[in-house]
Image 1: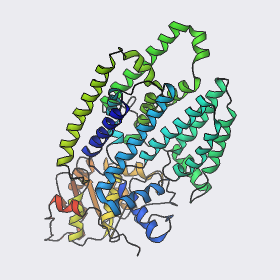
Image 2: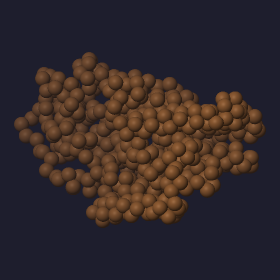
Image 3: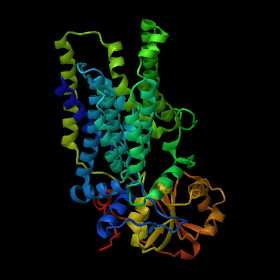
Image 4: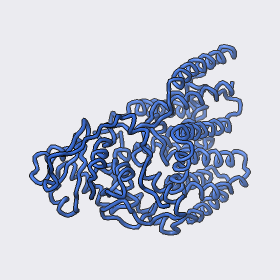
Length: 504
């Protein structure tokens, strides 16, 4: 049965991992950092691509940047697709190992995973991102801590400080790992078990956080980043408390409420059997603290939904299985899983046979044609573009053009810049902004009020526009003739990774 389950899971992940071929907005900055390090052996402490107000550059994703660059440089698109699928598969494989710690003989049924994966597909499959590593390390930490708690073999805890060095240099999400160890320390204390090994592991991991290229400055940056106001960043908003995003992720919302209902039902079921006092004495306090923690952070931000789902599957699979298990005959139970495998195999095979494993830069997301217009007309100067497209614009146009800022708003730029930029696109005080910051070229998303205002502005003129983006130049740059982009989208995507950023 396990073989059937893992084959089904692997094929399903491969299928979903290749359906969405978008490229993350910040991926271009990751490639730039990775390429710069591989060519110079150094991590730049300043942003050479920006003309905005920047500060010393502390890159909490530098390790991921090197990995992404090497994969892209040597294996291209297919390598990126496969790497993403492998990391996601390893994450769920680790979750199954946690489940088996709870019950070694419990069958692994794919449908439980099917609905859970669907609930967070927007977060784990959309594109390859640095937090993919944090999702994997989170489950590995959970497995090590849970195994130690069950087997009382505390030697394995010494893996955590070593793993923490790696995680710390891949992504700032390592903070979740530290919190996880701390929760285990409190939980084991409440369980009246030996909590000291967890406390020592926590302190050791805190110490190994200092093993990074920036030393104590890295930790200071992470602490300050946790307190940043991210009201303009959608993935940091709450889908439960924000009116804009309240029903934007319906699959997760339905799964969240159903899972919480089932969890509460299983709790009351156990209370009814054992009584409140016996239930409290018998339960694993650590388990409930971790579930509560991941519920709270998932309520706070869409970015944390994955941690809640992974924790719930790891800890509550056995509870949910017992609720829905109808004790079918073994042959029928196995046949059900085989049918699922065959259906997913057919879907995956038919999809892969027609698939070209090519990541695409889409005109609806990136100002492809505006960039080409700038290149063929040899327009130089400072470009103002939205922060999420800034990484791509600078990747394609540096060194002839610099951007104001990109998606690394918390790492590179003054904290107020993201709010200033957002106000500009909403057409608030945009004239004063462009007086304050010398701007030569503006690339505006057409659905923002700024686009309409600039069309009627006497200081700017519309030089080029496509369906989604518009390019404005200053009036004194106006001339009678411009060259216009003629290449097909297919041609642009063939050369999407070409850049003039080169240190050799």
